Image (cartoon, rainbow, N blue to C red; front, side):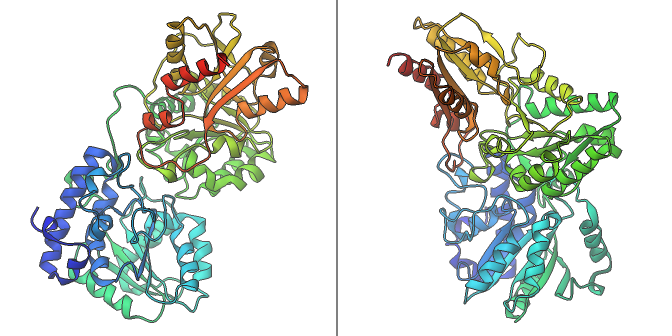
Length: 565
């Protein structure tokens, strides 16, 4: 480290020479690489914007000027440059720096953001309400595939206020970029100054790794009186050879999984299904590798549809596939499927179409924090009509559900977490619509009901309870919706305790409680532990489960507290 640890940031940056800024950029790349490889996080995307971050901080007066990130995972260098170098070792750790912009963390972070295509909409609002300083949007080229970007652009073109709009063009989302916007930017990269964008002034093909050129163009933008676009060409993974060669692999890094993950099981199963069924289509929104569709893309590229960062379009386009007799499997993270709620309800559910939603990152997601927790999918999908929801207990049950879904003629959602598969069960029963299975049957009056990966914590808790002389039954409530009413009826008069890794709204616990109340049942005791509806900051998955009482020890203690009443 040659200069970074000697500076008082951000104040000292404006006194540096171009040569010193270039040295600073190299230091930043070293620090970002070291701690991201250690703690996990977004590596390649951050390395690509180091020089641009230095130039932006050099030219503009943050926080008087406002920098709005889109998607947000490009902010590591900016965090260091705005005074958070000493805390950077805590990146994505409990109590440490968030991997995305976070207003609560610093006055330099304009808005909390972890989803794509939102920056220009935020800028349109801030430009209307903010009377001094510049509004600067830093948007990745992939985020320009999102519909919200074009809705905001339509508004921005009518404003009499200035917005500086920077396109970080690295020719990548997470996977390769797709669609017309990608082709348009390719033309700009090839032909340069011959192009503008919807009559906006556009400075094309700025070298994102030439500090002097960046500073000159940013100064021009700052002195301009009107909205304009800076097209900055960067290299994703710049300065770290492995990331330069394979930016998709190094987009987000973390600990290698020793055991199979749900994502891996999903990907392998989908290749097997596609081999047997020519009607199967794989659909993703710029997440081919992230969702596990990499092998599918290699083997069946004609049946892999990547729509870019456009979840709403992915869902409605899949409705069209289903209407034409095809079987779409739409793989989208839980947090991103939120962006397509109307499409799910209006275009799939109301039409009763056989679209399969493969909801990765369901439940707690450790290092990404509030913007990425997958805790709401049951709440919002459970409010739609004709949506069935399934939560597999292990890898085999996930594969079984994917196979079973081929012949299901209505909307079907399968939710599974981002983690290694905690427990592979010896006991599996054939999937029947809306039916649960008993994993432990001691004919006990205490029945623990759970599903998904957290069921493994319930099973471990039964050993803790057994050592204390407490016998329980355990049910795998793999169908979240519809739940197994027939089995519930057989449990009348017992103590039912639910453990579910999603918020309480539309949980099985809440619906069974309502069902028993309507029946006037006062004999059956019903308790439940769900994730409280709150924002959950960065922590490991285990720490997050423990914080809401869904780890094994907490589950055992909760059961004891209820049966000793």
